[in-house]
Image (cartoon, rainbow over all chains, first blue to last red; front, side, top):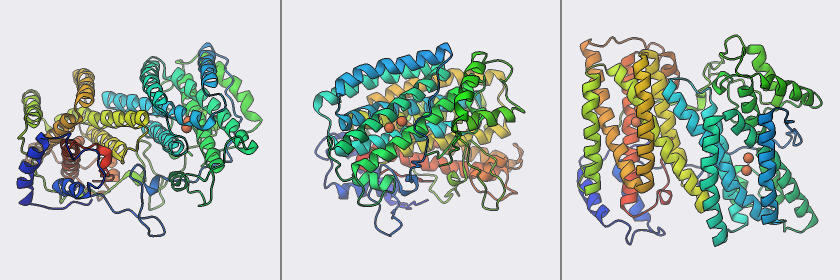
Length: 291
Length: 291
Ligand SMILES: [Fe+2]
Ligand SMILES: [Fe+2]
Ligand SMILES: [Fe+2]
Ligand SMILES: [Fe+2]
């Protein structure tokens, strides 16, 4: 609710914009110091970004997330819960994940920082795919979602924040970027198809992936405690996102990230269980804000 | 942060669940009265939905949206703003939308309630597609989103709430359901491809679609005022979502929905303008919570 009424002015700017549009891709690209220009675009449609402040009154410095999305992670969550696979589908999900683990272990060895960064680019896919498919289904069937669209999109958002955090600690090299590009293409489509065919299976796979993620982050913590990985100060983005004390370290970040993964594990096994009982997700209220 | 520690109990339930899973799709399906069973699933993974109350202390009755997503629409927004198409791309976007309008007018005639319901199933697609593609791009490139993922997903969410509202006023018939199914399949893919090739074009198209939506809702209001469409009481879901007074009517709902469309128009033309200036969306902070 922050519109500027520019009335008669906007028509002229219209033409100006359209013209400058013709030569797009030019000098203005690449950003940096383009603040005047930014202002111009903004006032044009009256879309003014709200001034956001922290609790202490200082300016909020992130655009990719806002103060009301931050939280204190519930680190008391049981990290050892495991869904014992008994049905054929569960076993298939379980062994798929175990099979994926093997090449990953070989590739990364003990480089847990790099591993975390790379795997989070993949971890953020299932929530988005599931949320999108449920959204389309809700529209097509004229049905309420029970909050599951939001819950899955929140998971995707949360995983993306894990990535934004680990990016600060470990920089991807060019061949890693190329790898992520390929893996995302394959994984997105594979997960999309799996979700279309069997959401029960898809959520179970994610449940097991999260169990493995918890394990990897526990190993990460062990390496940090042994001193094999330097316990650097926590990135600023992590301190703001998880409301950590200002002197937090990488270790504290890994602990809250691991707690997040345990929550994702619960949500996804739960979603799979709902399908196992022959129900649709929207018959059970979704766990929104379950951190 | 609402976990139940069930400790030793959960392993047994594990096996029980897996077994009952084998016979899924059976008697439990279809819901209704399945509350005991619901409880069982929930306590299993410790995922307990939070008890949510309104400001007056009464229980919150919606799962598909929560109190903190409700808002008062800014109805003071300029409804007549129009982006004059001058470049070739803009003209293409403009005439695509105009061409789509013609068969729609013929199909619906003056049935504005039905029209609104049907078109909202399509309107909720672009935000989701754009949000998903930006999410994947953010992951692939190890880049912040500038809040645009959230802004576009919020738009999709908002459009879905429009649909949930009009569903209460107008029930889809079987052939309308079939039509939505087909149109969604075509439109989703068309928009997906357009966004991949030219987000500049994609956002411009949505900007023009929203301009048409404003026009249609204005016609809807005229028919309501003439008495050709009965001004029924506003659906409960609309009263809660837009925080309308309890005695609101369909007319009040159409007014706030129209204001929403005007906001989407601004956001999408703005996004297209950013691309026209040769920039990426994440270089300008996204308008989050712009209602
Ligand atoms: Fe993660
Ligand atoms: Fe996760
Ligand atoms: Fe709408
Ligand atoms: Fe809209």
